[in-house]
Picture 1 (cartoon, rainbow, N blue to C red):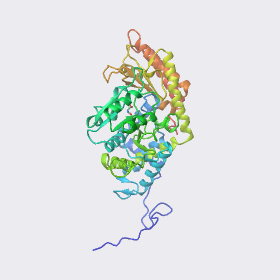
Picture 2 (picture 1 turned 180 degrees about the horizontal axis):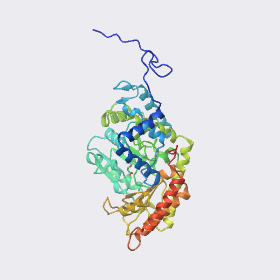
Picture 3 (picture 1 turned 180 degrees about the vertical axis):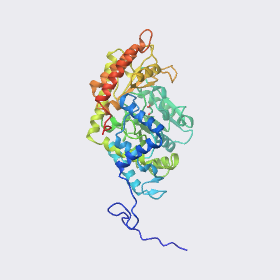
Picture 4 (picture 1 turned 45 degrees about the vertical axis):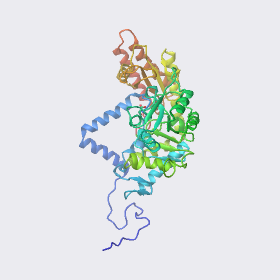
Length: 466
Ligand code: DSN
């Protein structure tokens, strides 16, 4: 028996968005649906609702200065919480393994287009679930197990996925780590020497805790001399790169990766960007871009999160807007102001300053450890993270340093003057901890908390209050 299929219709939806001839199905207005969804959550699961409400309030009321953190616009959160999360859509636009993906295809194409526009890239892969997933896809695409790679040592500011033994990238590959100078700076001669000695198949540049600019062109020269691929992970500085405030690696590196929730003010997720190397042959069949697409799906991921892809598209539109240039400028200016104020107050900074959004405080010798400082600052409403600094011998959960960043301050509209005041508040707390007796007096905690509250009230999270 053969089935007779109805003739395809060019536009199966009528002007009201419903299928001609079929009974009308009620479809809620999106904005009304969001309010309804939250009310439904409150009524059906008050325990979870209260936790979410408390977390929301905490974000409004505290100074978020974790350098790896930022705040997404509510329109980004709306995409993340949308019905796209219901969709299973393995594959890529125009080539899915499931039906019902026509709208998803348009959304993914839009995200790709916007990623390319924001970074001047030739091609982009928008499906990685995170920056780590993006790195894993690139590494598994370019290397075979046992091949060697060269990345910045974790203790010197590198990322887990750049070859740390704690990560699959350091377990299944022969990972070598380059280090920084005693001042905390990248030493390109040392990196070149290591590249020529170990002949890695891949060199990884980019960092999680490095406050200075990175010379991607120099890295590419080294990679070419060593006949290695170059991966630039710009997760921490992607906004500065997009705004033209930091050299772009997109046409220097073979591949560039980034997470989307830090300086791109997007959802939790990752991107892979390709510049002039996009159409060169990959290590196996097809172009480098095609190889990397296969490396994301089906090699290391299954179905993509289309809600996150939509949220990336929304965030990338903001990155391309004139307002973003102002935010990027503010985050660099703010970090400068914080560095200058901390230096004035007698603190030591890794590399002596910053070129980015990040300031790394070296607390060693002050009598205060990173964990104690982190806890005391949080009690005052200032959220930072303890961080090891180059040459640190303290345990990873203790650490001899603190990492500060300005992504959220900049988004809240806090300028140099406010950023410097934030540095003063941090310095007041650290100075008290370093004094004989080493504790946080209640009156200081209350004073700092009050001022933090005033600053947060004067600079609300952008777009969050209706
Ligand atoms: N890479 C981690 C960090 O820098 O803190 C998480 O984004």
